[in-house]
Image (cartoon, rainbow over all chains, first blue to last red; front, side):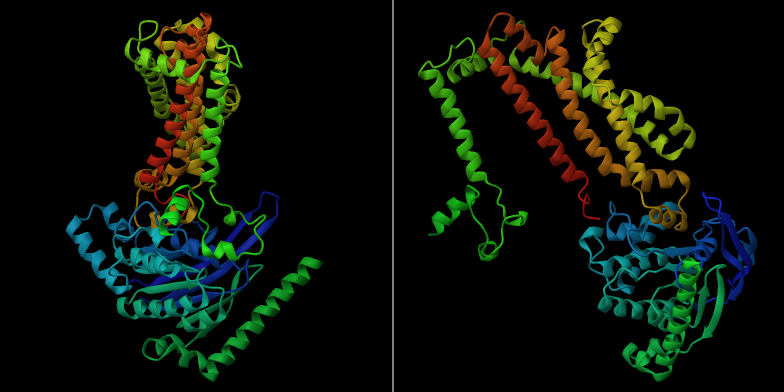
Length: 266
Length: 285
């Protein structure tokens, strides 16, 4: 099984001004294959640093990250990434973007075409393969980004605010797509977001992180993602329990932000 | 009515219905038409002034020849040539020089700019050189290249290579700098190797900047080659102008100036068309 184990990871570095930043301190958790984790926290809580360490773009100062019992030392196609915006290749068509990873591996053309056609269907873009990236709306571009990531069949998908740049209506639709892909593909997904509602809806597990030093402050196990697969998202979000959790987490984050402001004034 | 409508449109006078309803248009640049109608008037007026000025003998033709005289020279030099070469051979001599010099400048400048964008050592090593040579007008090197390689083809091409080189280095370096980190990270996560990232991400991503550099370099090269030929050459459009001026053949001088202008404009249009064709995503990402 391709479990992801984050073991006592710390990240301390000096800024050019000589200040020491504790971006992460002793963060540990493990994810079973197929788990959906959302991470939430005020800016500076180290959530992006954590994602970059798992992706292999940063080496932690302490601790290890293991995927399928193998320690991670750099980026690899077993961990796909979906970024907020602008990570698609504008000089390639939609189909070429989705097939990029396979093309780089030297996969035969007809095999690439089969995979790409299937994924275009999966993300609801089946007539858009030959379109240019700049001809698509923001939501469609993120569909391409998801498909491009899935084409490589990674074990883990890391999403760095994937829906952050979309308008509210498109965002709701895309949340449904993320859930659908999660269920259909059985991938492990880690999703960073700024939206409390999104974190609640798109997380079987949810970490609320706190800054200075960056750490996991509270962990939740949630039923909403599972419910969202079959039920109407509107109904899930209207659940009183959903609302109560949202208020609880919002309060927690506001307290943290006030604390940060207080420290800044000192 | 529809005929008048079409006529107005073809001279660029049409304003759309929404613009007509706008109560505030000063400062709203979307409400300013392209003014093609006034461009036509402007060209006609200037041509008439030139023609009438000559026809009424307001100016001495030695200083300002009649349009007909320039036209006659155009036909004449196109067919019989001036100083051993026809007009087109002069034009081609100049174009050939800039094409070779420009191509060499791209060939060396683009890889160097890439290397400067990607490596601290190479950036540090070449930064003082680039920064020193970049602000020097290429024309300032004319005496030097004449001392080095005489007044033949080699000196022209060397000069134009020099003119294009720094522009292309800076354009390529800027292109590398413009690549978003998320694109690079995405490519690594998709399993691309360093070499693949260079060829399939960094290179195509920097094409808009490189193309802008090419357009600027072509413009500078055209200006430089004409000036270099004015100083010393045996053929070329600049040489033709200079040779004619020594004999007060002002009609040929004016013809040369017009040809220089038209070709410079044509080069720019061509580069723009190429850009639209090759980099359709530019400015839309």
